[in-house]
Length: 226
Image 1 (cartoon, rainbow, N blue to C red):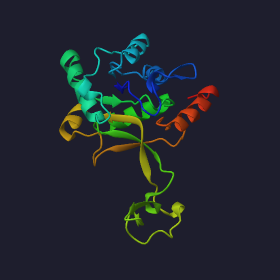
Image 2 (image 1 turned 45 degrees about the horizontal axis):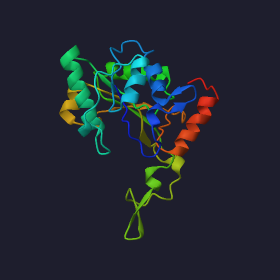
Image 3 (image 1 turned 30 degrees about the vertical axis):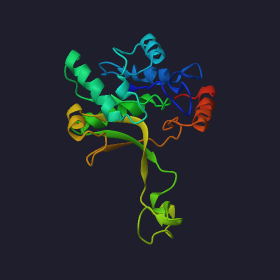
């Protein structure tokens, strides 16, 4: 499943904006259609332009997303459950929902296959894409009443970052979950999830700002083998 809402405040028309030689969302469509075992690639969108481009590129877009699921506050869980319920009603039960965001255009086939294999080799436990954090959370702060407060309590600020255990953050590139787990937990995040570690900063790039877009354009123009 690919989620692609029409509205984008930071980068207008982002999901179908031309990146290199094709619209942004087509990067994800092209790579997922090369993965064996995918029963269908369903795109959930509220935008006719996105729908037309996705259909032209082999995706299943059976409807436009309802307005109540196309707001700034709509969660990915609500969107996924809407699509999942429709799909299983029409096509029958599935053994996994792979959620891919179009804002991660440089995924590699071997990474997707690794994540799918992790899922099936571990009794369909949730697999989430993560990348090493740029700054360790032990060295991060928030501000309260104009005062810096550590996110993690304790006197470990003098410890060098290389001496701390590795830390990871969600990169948005990969979410694979069992449908019943999603329905029960109402979340892609759980205590039992497995990490799909993506070290390559290009592959884990999540386009959210104009700066991210400029970086993506550089790699798209460089003909990088992604």
